[in-house]
Image 1 (cartoon, rainbow, N blue to C red):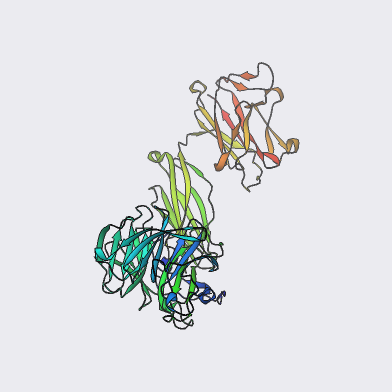
Image 2: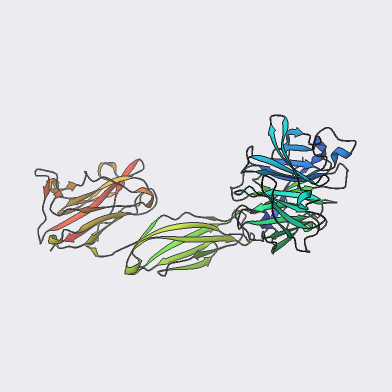
Length: 517
């Protein structure tokens, strides 16, 4: 087993779909051969069908010809780790001399093997070092001979088998009953292998003689073709036989960045079989954006950024934007989301941002931005600036509602706070400026001694949005001394501020002055 030359290879147009089959039905991109396994180390002379084995995070591999050679050592089915190392070996010859396809069925929790010589399908299980035959199904009675690759549907458990000589795709139940049979397009020559693509419910069908992989619908309509021949230039003679999609062998990829594994049958009954692992370029990464709050009738511009780990050019776009939102890609992985809501937009919105790397034409990386549109109706006047907190933001206090005392309708809101921190609001009829009170990083913008009150019974948490709010009762504004609260009167002027924890210290918002009527 050798790690291949790390230089990038240009995959033919549309090849990346194979590497992204768990997350994308699209084609295009760059990739590299990251692993080449010489199967002669465990005498798999002619590796054929292969399948990911989720119970152990491993792969299954069958050899359809080794038992006919003088190299046969009593094994033609192997469980391998994803790097190609043998974990367990099994012998199918008591029931199958020519296993050509293998698949794990997640519905039954068992393994199915096809034999193109005996025209049968077998259901087996692996128990320790034993291979247990559970059932045998005669495919010939359904007119299926020369069965090659097999794939299991992840939800129905039905089994899809390609037939090489006749070019058909046949669907069976796990109990061996024929459900459907279609003739594949003539462009698919001698189909040898098949992989189910859960995105869109399509299939990838591999042709041995042409080293092409065709994506088709269950009805047989062609969606795209990939020529593997261009990938393996420089690797000598190559005969495509089996394939599977699974996580990367080194475990370093993001779950969306799976690898595509290919079995090279080589020359017939010659000990020259190989396994190839291909991986694609990494997808762009969008910088997380905090939840946003924007008032009706105002404009808010939100910066968006993304980077490609491979250094490719990144394009950004907004998807399904609401009418009050617009999106501009500024280039270089930077964009702006602009929000200008009106009254009908009040409420919560989720905006989707997508990023795609130039060298990786696949389903874009996506991220969402939570946006709350609120009724403006701002009252009061801001004063006394705040000091940046540990997140780099300067926190602000806003007052909404009515400055008419009789309405008793005032809501205070603190924004730009450190995330997931506790805090509360303060009130006083007297403004002030005390820098770093009690070791705080911020400025106390209130004074007033006994009239300086805290809404200490209304402790809030800034949560994931870095904000909290409080509807205050104008008939019971807290003060520091008995009677510990006062009712505001028309003509009163009061000032409000928020204090909040900021990591190991604390901080303050700016202040807001409200002249009540």
